[in-house]
Length: 330
Ligand code: TXA
Ligand code: MG
Image (cartoon, rainbow, N blue to C red; front, side):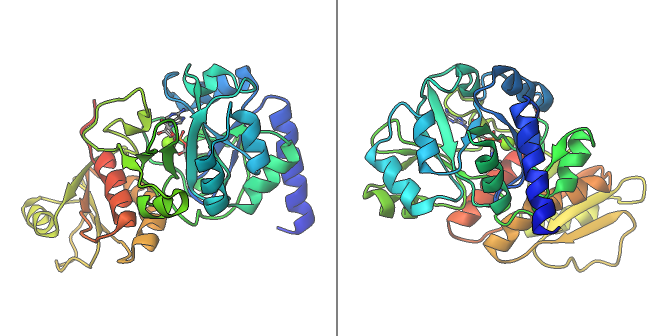
């Protein structure tokens, strides 16, 4: 798209937002479902369209630190240090909510999650709109997050305006860190890890995320079953996965899709879709949701996911998402 055409699309999207409509937009992590954060009707429509429980608060997206300050009741030293170190980027800060943002956005509470996304189209949209936008991931609640325009369209159809920013670079949602207690607490793992947060603020954050948690008022993104494909998905070690494929009577009627880290050495089996995942953590994260969508599109009876064994915070964040995608449904 030419610069002029893109500028026009962004301007049109900003007009829609001003009229209280929703617009999906790209970020570096996943696509967001945008609406004016100060417009209660528009925010209500976001909850409705996603089928999201009203108690699960939304992240507010801002163009810069100055806009962030307008949505928070106070802007502590740690927020300043983290924004300077990581914004624009995949880090969400939980702070006290300011009066400009309705309680509805915050699931009825008095806190607010805020982040400045690192994507030129998102920033252009926020600037053209001139105010904060809610932006939950643009997927039906509980399902796999979208990393391409097609994922958003498949979920919500053509009626929803979607700005195209290409495939998302990071591929998993932002790290969420609460600054409401000392030390700060990581509520959702993401590309910005505890070590880097500690470096920026001079104190090691606590964590509070575990795939075994039940729904939690503190951060409902921690519901155990989340990011789930339509088909039943199971997380397996490589030997378990191979044994299971060996036992399974796979056929065109009983299809299985497998996300694996190395090719499976079986004769090509009718009904088996093998999706080869990257060995590098950043590349794996980038492909993760697209691969789950791709697996789902083969309408399999089951999706088997090889558990990656890699060390490091990005692998931890990936395993967190995989455990939720493969968690038993309520
Ligand atoms: O990378 C991202 O953060 C993406 C892109 C679009 O920016 N957005 C995203 O939004 O993942 P969503 O709504 O799918 O996830 C928001 C997470 C949820 O786990 C929610 O519970 C948590 O942030 N959250 C939001 N507001 C909160 C608050 N006030 N206190 C604690 N957790 C909060
Ligand atoms: Mg989400």
